[in-house]
Length: 122
Image 1 (cartoon, rainbow, N blue to C red):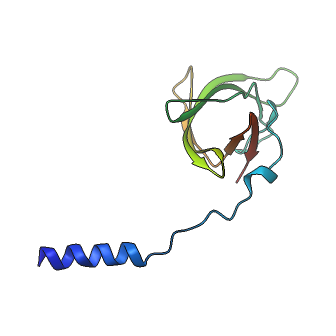
Image 2 (spheres, rainbow, N blue to C red; image 1 turned 180 degrees about the vertical axis):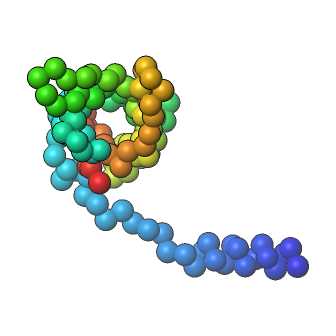
């Protein structure tokens, strides 16, 4: 019975089509170090300058509230770094605040190829 179950799993894996990436990452705009937060609320992200190290994309950044006397929150974000289309796709980001214990995830993704970072927000 185990053999039959194993054969069934192998056949299912072989029959499952490989999902090709249909996104053209190189068509994304070039990443700027300041941009609106994916969380909204008028918060701006500043100082975003990722690096790839140890299978991860990592950067520190500030989240700045709108207004004349804005609160500024310092954070770090870490993404999975996966090879895609001749570059590195940084996805599944998890951020945390340096102070205050706030943390979360983001739909924001960035792509690195030939020294150029390109973002996609979803």
